[in-house]
View 1 (cartoon, one colour):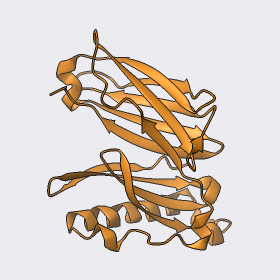
View 2 (cartoon, helix red, strand yellow):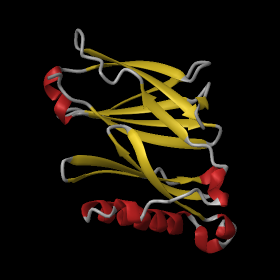
View 3 (cartoon, one colour):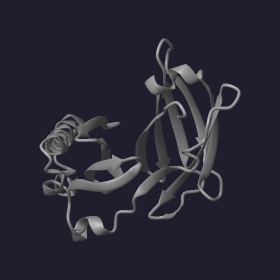
Amino acid sequence: MIFGFNTDVKHGDTIYHVQSEAREGEHLLQTQVFVRGRCVGKRARSYANSASEAQSGDAQKEHQLREQHRLVLDAIREGKLDSVLDRGEPEALATVKELEVLWLNADSVLSNRNLTMQLRVTEGGEAAPGARLTFRFARPGAAPFYTQAVADSVGSAEIMIEVEEAVLPDSSLLVQANYEGRTATRKFVLRKAD
């Protein structure tokens, strides 16, 4: 099983978050590009025709996904992102429901060393009740902190993280949502209030 790749890359004044993952249920290798938490485009390649062939093992899929990830990163660095993104959904990809993780209170502030995050998981724009969320909180000078939550009937979940405000600029939170065989991974960068 391939977890995926996540990279932040800057071009001009914009920081792009590039997320690539193998979507096993749909036999897709998908790369999504985010700016400030919003998906601005994606590139997807189906491996359904070769899914049963021996050559499409995990190592081969990982290599293909890594190459696709690198292609998108290079396009961003060269200012040619639009040239590698999918335009107009091909029929094979049109029925894929996108699993999304949204940070509802992204403007929240730290209170008494606690940061409360309210998240919502949707699939194709509809609530994903029962979605399992795994959180990995990384901060300097400490081992990563892991926790899990399950989305309620409207796809919402809430966690509270204890953190010192001084380490926020060097901290990040990786969230992986699992719902009916689909996964989505998002990286959130935390920062001190202005």
